[in-house]
Image 1 (spheres, rainbow over the protein chains, first blue to last red):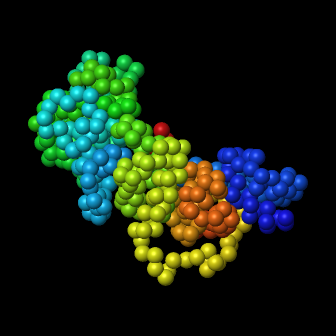
Image 2: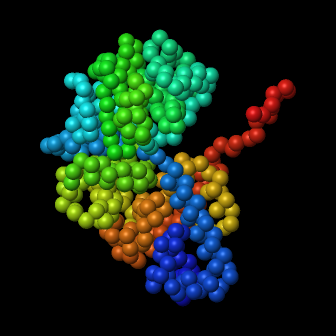
Image 3: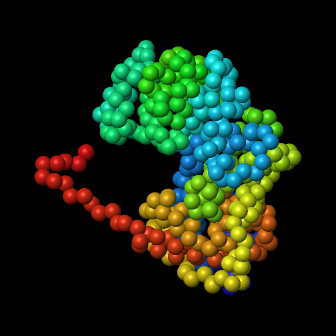
Amino acid sequence: MNTQEAKFILSAYRPSGGDTGDAAFVDALRMAGEDPALGAWLSRSRAHDAAVAGKLREINPPQGLRAAILAGARVSGSPRRSRSVWGWAAGLAAAAAVAFTVYTVRTPAASPSGSAALASFAIDDMLHAKHGSSGEASSALVAALQVEGAKMPAAASIDFDRLRDTGCRTLNFAGHDVMEVCFARGGTEFHFYMTRRDGPVGSSVERGPSFLAQAAGAAAVWSDGRFNYALASRAGVEAVRRLL
Amino acid sequence: MNNEAFAQLVDAHYAPLYRFALSLARNAPDAGDLVQQTFFIWATKGDGIRELSKAKSWLFTTLYREFLRGRRRDSRSTSIEDLPPGEKDLAAEDVDRVSKMDAALVMTALQTVDETFRAPLTLFYIEDMSYQEIAAALEVPIGTVMSRLSRGKSQLRTALERVESSSGKVLPFPLSKGASAS
């Protein structure tokens, strides 16, 4: 085996060390131990591989993909769809139709489709996205939410446009803005979402709260005259219910 | 498979599957569709795989098949023999370059690697798959995987250098008088 052959084989050697003991690498590794130049190359190669792998694992799936997968797989009898009817974003609509059937521990109201979609969206975002807002309006909202015993804010106290324009974290849900802030209450982390009533789930969200519980977290959704809201937490449905 | 088990399967694999799909499809909507389609097939057919230890390989294989099926496999398909040899050996600055790059730029560079090399390379990096696992997932011989990893890494290094040099440089922003850094 020459140096080039050793490099060829060692290109398949994982930086995690998961190939330790694999007979296919023994000779090449021994050669790298005996040849300083090849050894240095192997060190660089493993460092490079680890750096690339680390960067690629930072890439996150888009919002709503998980909910769309769960919903889409349960639409019984669906033929092979074209992208126009089976895109993952379109699957969010399907999520509305099935998510409650699948996961809801309590379905307090009829017409749950908009509630389920928004709740699924909130839980998925809470679990899988990076969070963080900036801006004076966002900070004021967080401060209000963190007051022990305080109720969730209502339309009269929310300046949606100002929140968005001054740095509040803004998500896209089916082409509409959803605002999100994180806050802590009693040592528990919560995520508060709001979107206009003319937004992605429209007026199908009931005024009273509906709850969606999944293994990894729970959410409540409710509405008032102008906005639909969601409150999500990993601490479960009871923790969410206590804040309403 | 019950709903909870299916959700657990999705949670365990949908993110790496999406990264794999993104490297193949080179755009987010198609990548999302590929992932969703893969889980849809599992829900309708793959449930027959009772050994969850084999689920990961099945999902990646299925996604790759769906990708190949979804695009036209016409005469432009490139075989390994047609491709030029790798161009670039590894230098110390290559490691620093990657460490300083944004993740999206690294993905962009990966997406420019020839498709033949990109699939095994992505599984190697994202899923830490061994060469045997990659061979099983992509249904190609082990020797072919080793060859594609070696040449793919060389292409990727060249691509990373090219992407970095074409991306905007971040320059220190001068503070105006009276302003202070926070």
